[in-house]
Image 1 (cartoon, rainbow, N blue to C red):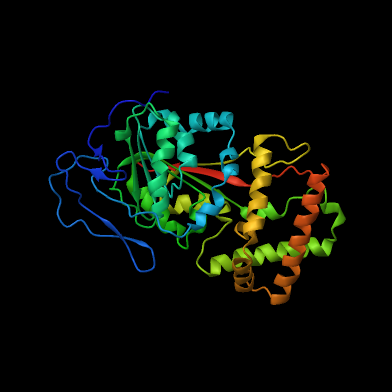
Image 2 (image 1 turned 30 degrees about the vertical axis):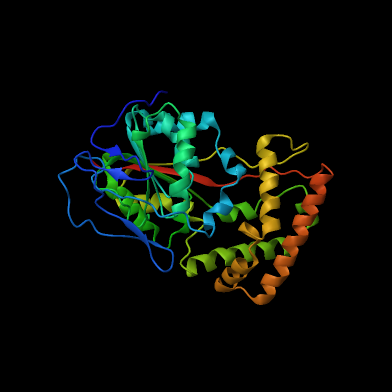
Length: 369
C-alpha cells in the first residue's frame, strides 16, 4: 500500500529526530541526559503560535547515542524478525480495523520491528511517531523505517526521545498507539497505559503485545524425558523466583500478558479483545530454515556473551530477591549449563527437536468516544 503524501498540521525538520511546527523553525522543548544517563525534558515555557493537532508538543534533538549498549540491544538479534506470520497479521489488521487509522505511535519503539509490520495496514498517507528512552534507538530507527518504506515521504515519520511514563505527545493526538514487550519492563505499567490512553483520540485503538515468559521455561523437548522430576521442578522454582525477584526490584513483570486485559479495563478502555500469537519457535532437523538458524545463533550468542538468559549476576540477584537461596541458584545454574551443552550436542548430531511453544498476547481496546 502506498503511503506517499504529506501530513497536515506538522512537518518533520531537516535534522533527524526534530519536530517543528509549521509556524516556526524554533524548537519548543529539548531533552538532556541526567548524570545517571536518563533522559529528562525541559518544560515548554513558551509556545510560538498555536500548532494544530495531532502533534502540538515539540520534542527535539535526541542526544548522541550513549556509548554503553542499551539493555534492549541483547533482544534485537535476527530472531526478532521471525516473531510474526504475515497472514496472521493480515487477520489481526482486519480485526483491529487498522485501515481506518491514519496515525500511529509506537511507544518503546526500539528499532521499530513491530511498527514496521503494522504501518502498511494504515490508511495512507499515514503519520508515524516512534518514542524510545534510548538515544541509540532514536538515532538508528529512522534508517530502518526509510529502508522499509523508501517511497513514503520522510515528513510522515518522526522519532523522539521519551519515556512511556511521560509520553512526549499531546492529548488525543493518535488514531492508534502500540507497544511490544515494553510494559513487561516497567514497575508501574498502569501509569504507562494511562499515558497511552491520554494520547489516543476518542475512539482510538490501543494494541499491546506482552508475554507470559515463565511459560518459555516449561516446554518439553526431545531431551526432557531423560531429566528427573526433581530437576524439572527445581528449574521451575528457579525461574519463578527469578521473576518474583524482578518484580520486587521494580524491574517489571515478565508475565504481565496474563494481567493485561484487566489492566486495560482499569484504564478505561472498552471493546477489549485478547488474542495469542500463532508463532512457535520450533527446532527440528535439519535446522535449515532462516528462522531456525536465527534462533540457534541467538542462543549461542547469548551464551558466549553471558547476556540475556545467561547473565549470571542478574540471574543470581533476582533469584535471591525472589526468595531463593544461594544453593538453589548455584545448583540450577550449573544444571542449566549442562542442559545447554546437551542440547548443543544433540543439535550437532541432528537429534534435538522441540515445538517451542510460547505465550504471547495481543491485547487491544478503544478509548471511549
